Length: 191
Image (cartoon, rainbow, N blue to C red):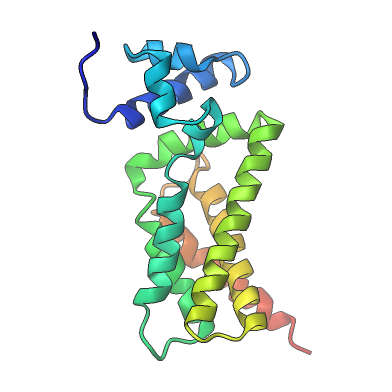
């Protein structure tokens, strides 16, 4: 009988990612992932509904970080300052030591159309949660929608840049640079 070992979901995630990267997502089974860390397939399914969810575990924590950033912003914060606060809060989700894992994870996702679709869906849900948090703070619907979409877009661009092989800045520094650039471009849209 296998004894309980703390950190089982993390161990399964790391094993899955290594197998997906080495053998391909489609060629790897849940049983093989579990076996790689000395567990049964049944144990795998206690933690994840399917092998795809191994790559997206923690999505709610990221969403919670965005929403917490809005909630923790000063009362007099402008809508765009709320969006920046959400991004700063989410930056803590991406410490520098997570970068190699994130690079490998994104590589696996990029190689599979169904996983790319799931990743896009994740960003849509993140935008909706941010929109709800902004409207709860009293931001009008249109402004909240614009800020939520800009914040999620800035997050996506910052993440893609943060995982590049030639990037060494912190996620927060990269995100700050992207937000600054979004502001520069947005000012050019004024009539």
